[in-house]
Length: 305
Length: 320
Image 1: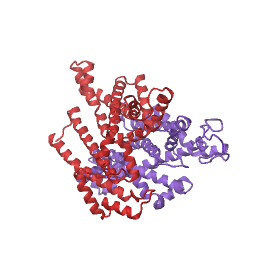
Image 2 (image 1 turned 90 degrees about the horizontal axis):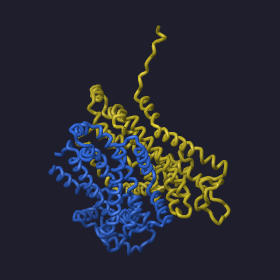
Image 3 (image 1 turned 60 degrees about the vertical axis):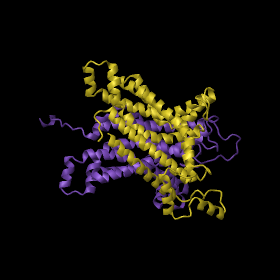
Image 4 (image 1 turned 90 degrees about the vertical axis):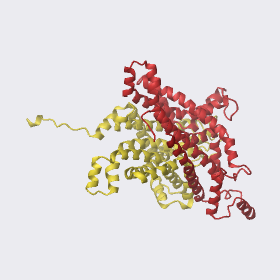
C-alpha cells in the first residue's frame, strides 16, 4: 500500500510536466500570440518587451528556460496583468472557486446520497420515480440557463437573495445551488444503482442472517459498497467542476480561477495558461490518487501492491 | 400432420433487446419526442417560411419601436432583439444542435473505438503507454484544445473536406457554416477519451475467449481480429455510451456558445439562442424560455433513451 502511494506520487510530477509541455505546444501551434491583439505596439517597444520575456530566443532555448523555472515552481509573470506573478494570481483567485466548488460538491453529496439511498430502498415508490425524474431534469438543463432562472425567481421576483457577487453567506446560496444541481443529479443516480446492486449481494444477506438490525446493515455494510461508483465519479467530477465553475462565475460575477483561465486562453497569456493548467493537472491527479486509495477502505476485496 | 407442427422461432439478441426497449415507457417516450423533433427541424423551417414568410435570419423591414415582441399568433415564440422570429430560429438552430450531437459523437466513436480496441487487444506495454496518454489528455482542459483547433484550422486554412461537408449537408457553402462544422469535429476530437476507456475494458474481457484464439489459429490478421471479431462483440456498451455522449456534446456546444466561442449569429443553435436569451432574461423571458425548454426536452428524451438502451442491451448490469 505504502509503495503504491509513493509510486503514484512520484509519477505526478513527470506527468504534470508532460501536460505542461503539451499545453505549451498547443499554445505555440495556434497562429498569433499575445502581441497580435487589437492594439498594435510600435516595433521597437514590442522588441524590447520580447527581449525582456526571452521571446527573442529560439524556441528550444525558451522551452528549456521555461521548464527549468517551472521545475522550481516559478511560472514567471503574467503578460496581461503586468508585474503580477502567476503564483500570486492563482493564490488570489483560487479561494473564490474553491469555496463555491467545495460547498457545491458537499451539497451535491449530501442531497444525492440521501435521495439515491432512499430511492433504492423504496424502489418503484413515488419517491423513487419523483427523485429520478428530477435528477434526469437536472442532467438536461444547462447551468447557464438554470442560474439566471434562479436569479429571476429569488432575486428579481421574491427579493430574497442577492443576484450576483460574493459578500456574506446569503450571496453564496444561488451560485452553490446552481453548481450543485447537475452533480446532485449524477450522484443520486449513481447511488441508487450502486445501492440496488449491493442490497442484493451475498454479504448483505449474511449480515441480515447473523441478526443485525436493518439500520446497521444499511449504515455499516451496504453504504460502503454502494457508494463506490460515486467515489469513482468524484475524480472526473472535480475536473468537470472547473468547467462548471466557469459558467457560475460568469453568471454571478465571481472573480474565480475559472474565469481567469478562460480569459488567459483568450488573451494568449502563456505563463498564466501554463501555470493554471499545471496547477489543475496536479490537483486532478492527486484527487484521482485519493479516490484509488479510498477504494481499499470501502471494499476490502480491492488491494494494491 | 406436418401442417400442425409449429416452427418455434428463436428470439435473437436484437429482437429480445428491442422488445425490452418497447416495454420501457420512458424510453419509448424519448424515441417519439426525438423522432418528432428530427422531423420538425427538417421540414419546420420550410413550413414557417411558407406560411408566414419568416426565416431564421429575416429581419423585418420597418423600424418598429420595440423589436422584441412577446409570443403572439404571428410569432408563436416571440421575436428576438433584432425582430427575428424565434420559432424559425429554434427550428433552424435545432438542425445545428442535433448535427453537433450526431457528427461529434460519430467522430468520438471512430477515434475512441479504434484507440480503445487497439490498446485493449495489444495489451502490455503498448496498452500502458496508450492509456497514460489518455490520462494526460484528461488533464489538459478541453476548452484549450477546442480553441487551438478552431484557430489553427479556422478561416482560410479550413480543410477542403470540411467545406465540402458543410456545403453538402448545410446547403449554403459559406464561411460561417464551415466554421460550425469545424466546431463539430473539434468537439468530437475532445470527447473520445471515455469511449476509449469503455471499449478497452470490454476488449480486455473478450480477447482471451475461444473465438479469438480460433481466428488467430486460422491466420486472421491482427487488424481483422480487432475490427471484424472483437469490436462487433463490444457493440452493446458502445451504443449505450454513444447515446449518452450525444447530450453531453450538445451541452458542451451550448457552453462554448455561451462563452462566445461556439455558433455565432446569424446562425443559431439551441445553446447560442439560450445564451442570447440569458442577457434579456428579466425583460424578455421568452427569449430564454423557448430555446431552453426545447433543448432540455431533447436532452431529457436522449437521456431516457440512453437509459432504456442500457437496460435493454445489457440485462446483467441494468439499473433494475
